[in-house]
Image (cartoon, rainbow, N blue to C red; front, side, top):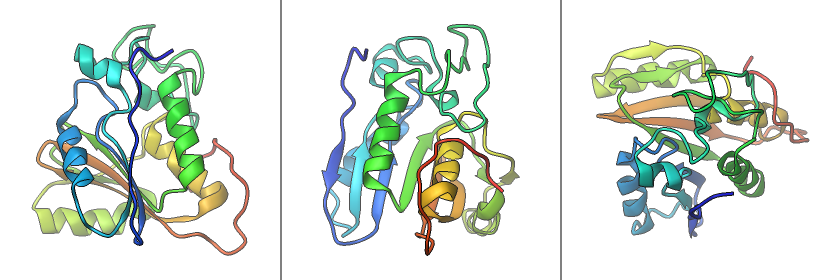
Length: 205
């Protein structure tokens, strides 16, 4: 059970349906300020905003949630037991063992975002893989940042979204952008003709 509720703010608009998560690690909170600014924006986008998916971790200044689990290792796509209980990257007892990751899953299934943005910190690079590679390289050149071509991490939110998309929504681009200390995991989606079903496991191809 969560000690503190996860806030979700909907800023309705006629444009692209975008989910933005300001923080998934409680010691990486710079993105929360961005989400707060988006609440006051008039972009025309259909915004679904989560200041923090890990409010307990934010209060305690810890990467993990109140159970000592790294939420960005607790999603089901290629999940594997990582670390000892309470260690930095503890993946939890099983996929979706944590209330926060279940809340994220339920919200994603509910709103089917066309774009998702996840804020992290401490990596001054543009990280992209698979279908995101071309977009990532383009952004790296424009931003003057190093480009990192690396697979998505096992059990991460991004890899879950890739699997979810390939099994139902049909994402066409996946890319990660870094601005200063903010690492943004961005997926741009477009529904494929005839796509159906929602499975929460799988891998990018």
